[in-house]
Length: 63
Image (cartoon, rainbow, N blue to C red; front, side, top):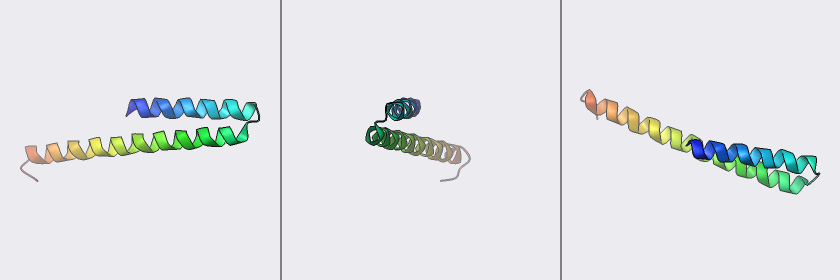
């Protein structure tokens, strides 16, 4: 998950650099990639939370 967050920040940095250089289409692409990495991080976090809840449910006799 942290890797995806790091990649999102890298893409944001590239996007802002592209804006500074007036490469707007490139900036939009980098923002899109940042969004995609952020979405992957969210999905991963949700999956981890689900696994944790499932594991805790088994400890307490719940399935």
